[in-house]
Length: 423
Picture 1: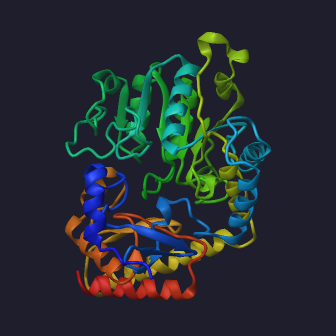
Picture 2: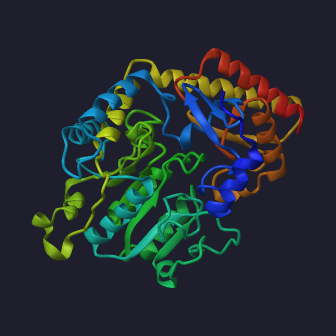
């Protein structure tokens, strides 16, 4: 019989060897010991319906038998080679078939790497230095990405605010910040900095905030006008909003995109994908020494991650998959609205059916500052009640997976009722 370990034992051990007692991701007081389908279990055996899904990768659930089968087969053939392999090539071809902007693909291991290389590639292609990003947009952990990600001090636009120590002033000097979903401001700021901007990088769905009609279209129009590279960060939205990602869902095609999470099927894998003329800067024979963008990664195109990703994409392509995800999400969104209206709590459901959450605010949520208007105390109470009822979610996100059963949805609705009654 295995000895049960208390939360405090785990936490004390973690504090000795891990800064702040964790990996820097989710609540460090939670230790997940196993997962299967739509469920995870913590160190004390508590079972949760999983709406965190590894922060997004496990769209088809944990331990899908078809994914396990191909991974086990590949492990016996080799776990990594630091060389081209047929599995990675096949995955690149499938990405090219699905993603509108993806003439060519280059693999890396993490979404943060992909975003960093995409911005660097845009600089190499244009010969310009400045980058426009949107306040509250998450693009990994590079110095550029950590400008105005979650600023506590709200500066006037386009001033960038660093969100981390250790970033040189020179990085801030090359960043331009705009509010998400403000079409006129975006047009004005691109016109002002047009000949200096290498790229505009944007999440087509910024965290959980959808684009207002015309916003992404305006970015596409203005970037083309000034020869600026438009980058869609589709680490989260790729293969989630639709099989063709945000580009398909919103009908706007960028010059480059970044992909991650789902394409690795639960293993570390991400990619930069884009037009041949821009991606050529990864090819020294085509662009020469001066234009060459160096990119090397020990696990880039790892065959185990590639087969897991390929099988995941195959499963997602099956008829009815996305319709089922939307139906489940819409059911839960309606339940949240019904129950919070019942108890008279001001709120909004923000997001798309595949990825959303409730924000406790009566302001219309269009951007990062709108999110800040939410009542954080109510949010914490709501999330704590959901967890108490066996529902695991991020602080401000609910990821829908394909493996959620009718019973899971019913239990989640019961948790929503309980959470509403205890606000």
